[in-house]
Image (cartoon, rainbow, N blue to C red; front, side, top):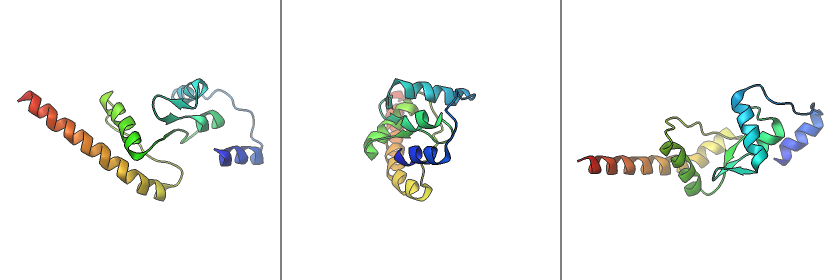
Length: 117
């Protein structure tokens, strides 16, 4: 966050205007409600950039982030894009989270089959 603020000052960007993209508008609105939206969605970068590009992050331990992703899964989300600002390190860090999510989804699927039988 500090680096983004520093870069914005160095470049002397124009004051933020309301973004045109509906998804970006939604992120800016979430950010206006507080730094953490939902359980784990960290929004200050969206507020600082007008939600341009990759501007939110799920924060917490790998278990907490996996839990947040499972909440989205439970809400019907079938595709998740997980990325950050450092692709190589992010791939390493998210490996554990992805494993946790996959294991929990598989466990739930097994339970659903058991209940159905």
